[in-house]
Image (cartoon, rainbow, N blue to C red):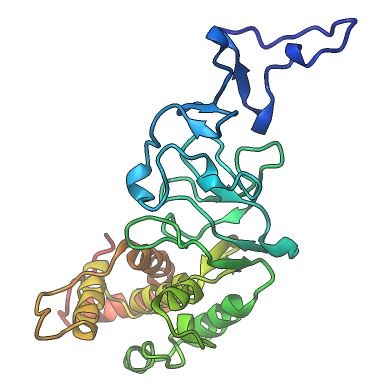
Length: 296
């Protein structure tokens, strides 16, 4: 184990400071002069890794040996696996999603892995700003001062519609289809990025960064919980709607919503389930011998 304690010399020399480019240790063993990034070694002269990217299958368009996609000015790679960038166009409080994958770490990092690393907020779920496969929606913009999601949630939770009214107006750009509000994009990629625009929300006193897609799915779950449905029954309804929306002669199978959707729905369901209305509706359902409501 290397001794991390260093004493200053009477003659100043950078040779006594092994931590250099990106704050990584320069190992001069055998004359290779490689930087230790933890997951693998990087040759600073050629700007190449000594081994393949352990996550190369997720980035087919990038060489598994190239450093930072060939753009070390804007991108840093703190451990040989992740891509992160700086503030979006230097706008205060506005950030662009540039990398990451779904995991248990809900923190959203700026300048990850550098001495300037900061956490700009905590995601609503581990699949916020993620595709169905758990990869980040690169290009999605997070605006810390966008209050549209908060206003939508406050209004909805204060005066929720009847469940039938909600179901009829929660898709196709209707009033409860939050992700589509203001959308003028045309291509699939542009629409996905717009649906994943990020904003600050405060839910039951806890602050999160949520995508527009999260907000819409959260209220769907909240509506189900507040209506006294069990999670199993709510899931069956959500998946049935997903099946209906994608039904065609080429696709006749029953479909299930993906994790970016279900994770946000569950967040909303938990809260709606514990509202006074939710508890009352569960008792009503039980009293008339309806579907047993189980919070699973």
